Image (cartoon, rainbow, N blue to C red; front, side):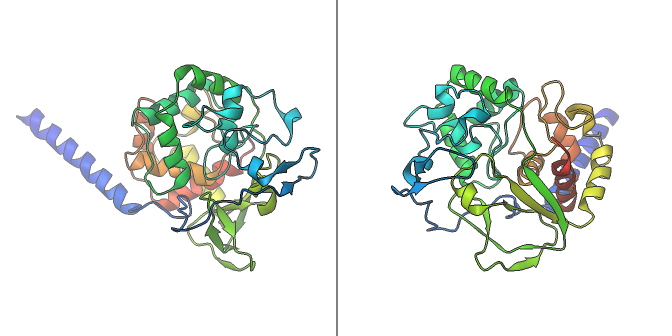
Length: 321
């Protein structure tokens, strides 16, 4: 009886701890889970010809936004893309290189997968296909699109894509700036934050605002034009303490390596999108990500507040990849 009573107390305490944690971050933070307002038009697809600095290529806007034939502005920057990465599998699976870019650098609304372990990349798509990985904000377009297309993926194609992106080197991509203010933003048709045209700013508060360094180049899916992340003042130093202590649980380096670039099949975190990192911590905390490799993270994020996630993401993103 004492064993049963103690077990019940432990289970009850765990439930209370989880309820407490969920109360700290009651709903998905909009700055990390951007949702385009209803009626937001998608990017234009016309026959207007576009050019980018440093590239001899030219593509129409229709070609740039063709998800089944990636417009490759800098083919010399990466090995030849496998057919699946460049074209996908019509009509249900868009080209991997369209959203994640031919060099795998990715964008805030999806994931940077360059240099991540091939098995890990494959595992994540399979987890989506099997319902073990979802999004806490089902209205956010890119995660919803990945969930939909994952149902049509083949393991053999995923292996090809995983091996390709794993062979790439992830390069510095995000400039992290501590600030009290950030540009005022709106959510565009791709679920990405863009600065308002009037150049207005607003108080940053307990948020991270991640926007393109060049909106024009990012809209053309330029794989050489990165992002800037505005983070709260003092968040990088605070994040370092949390990361090194594992927020009071297990140091992040235990699984992700001393330099946070990944180890033993775990993904690299250094220099990656802070918006993406916050989404993953939030999703794991709220049970929309599960699976064997996620289990150790559940304990780490269980009692995290949003301010902890912001600080951790700020620090990890500021690290050299």
